[in-house]
Image 1 (spheres, one colour):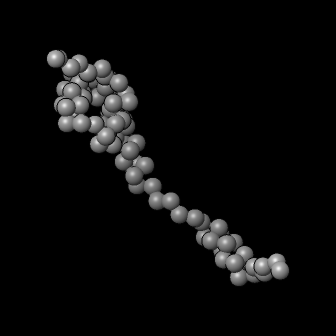
Image 2 (cartoon, helix red, strand yellow):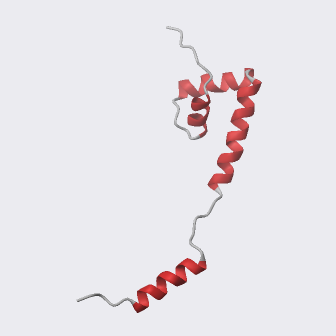
Image 3 (cartoon, rainbow, N blue to C red):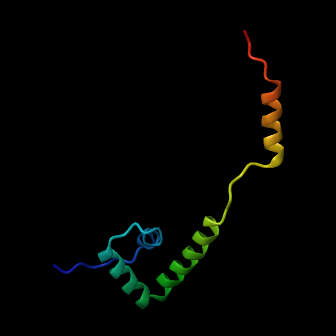
Length: 78
């Protein structure tokens, strides 16, 4: 049975996140070699993924201070 690969952007994103099988990887890599638009999409997505991976989520100092002040002054209701 001959398997064909449909060049979809979803497959490229799955490939970026290592969610594809070895067989799919071969098909996607072959498609990237022969389809310039798909390669451009892959490179754009890889750049975006790199940026997202570098984001550090943390609360602001103001938010931390508000939480700590609330905790210090909290009086449970009886």
